[in-house]
Length: 274
Ligand code: 6CS
Image 1 (cartoon, helix red, strand yellow):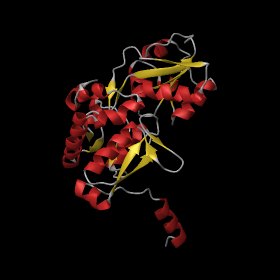
Image 2 (tube, rainbow, N blue to C red; image 1 turned 90 degrees about the vertical axis):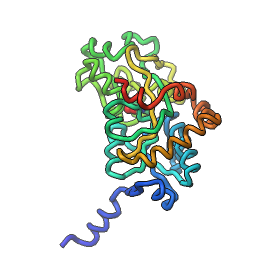
Image 3 (cartoon, helix red, strand yellow; image 1 turned 60 degrees about the vertical axis):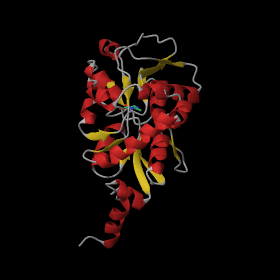
Image 4 (spheres, rainbow, N blue to C red; image 1 turned 90 degrees about the horizontal axis):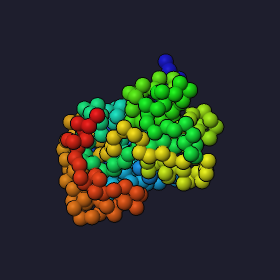
């Protein structure tokens, strides 16, 4: 017989389950829970729990129009976001999770929201001349930091960088510290994320190299559970109205993102892009 205190502790430790399935569920809950990576300007959460960033701000605006007043977030590693969505820990992913064929097969994405190229944070002057992920493969000593399950990690591995020289970095601050401590030779994230990180670090010994040669420009969308097309389609209707009215641009462009970039492409094209 399990002691009651142990059982109680296990129940308390159980992650909050976002059980909502449909738009009606979310409306009756009055809340939507999203996955984020806490990687400004895509997503951010402060010590009080306030959620911001271009992706959550767009999602919040759309859900408000759908009658879902509140939005909260769970910080999840990129590689664990889709499993968390499938396990109903979150209702959606609004995190800059870029559309790629394998992800498009696993979730139902909205139409595009945020687009960005890939970049490298590295020592000023780029002394080792890194311009592409293939450059890290060619240099037997080079170590590249990248988010676990992220696009940069996959691109580096596909370019031939051995697994033991692609270092999984849990978050932007850790990546900065690992670079400053010499544990990695460069840290790869999208351009706007590294520009934000470098500006806040005020570290004149580092610079951003962008775009990474040979890497595509990616766009994200809000990701919903596969088969949840009723909710995804309702989201898309309001997103399209916001793009048309200019409200979409007003939300994302102060963060540095281009509304035109997202409006000049679509889910089908992005999900077909390798
Ligand atoms: O979609 C991804 O995997 C990438 N997206 C962002 C916003 N940052 C890094 C991550 O690898």
